[in-house]
Length: 216
Image (tube, rainbow, N blue to C red; front, top):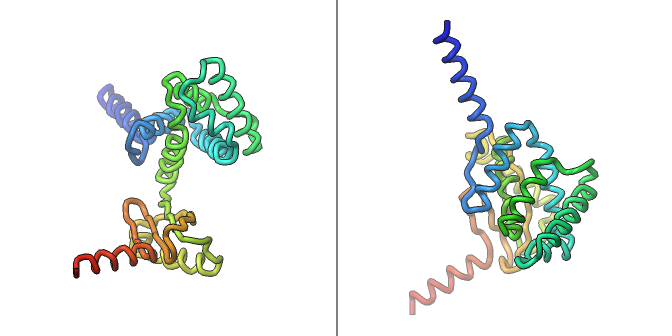
């Protein structure tokens, strides 16, 4: 009886440990913060709350120049950092219409501030959101173009990618983002996980220049 209970206890612990571990590893120091936050939030059953908090932070940092400058300033006093964090979290809550950030979110930024790593905020937030996408079985697809895609063209491109072997084989849910890079000149660049399909005009020009140089 004792042995059976011990085995069940070990299995239960292993299951809990597995469910709280990040499904993917994000490289770099920011990735370690993001992974640790995921584990803590999973154990506290607070993944959705923390994700909502960080989406609010991302929106705020992207639109508020003062807060962006605050995060990038390495010489702020402890008092100024505390005041800046309060402003950041308050603005982020307003952006999401939430009651208030979770203790885990507050703790994350307190640790970043204490360690002088607030400048890593963007990478930590993006890392956590990427882990959450993997947690839900989603794959992020970034479509880079020189100009915003027309809705009809974007839909056709997304439909084609959804029918691709990669999406069908793993039954993945694709999440699309259209980024603008005028340097692409034209065409598209598609990033799916660690794979890149470069069909941009800039890439074709580069290959042509290389061929011309090799031919001279």
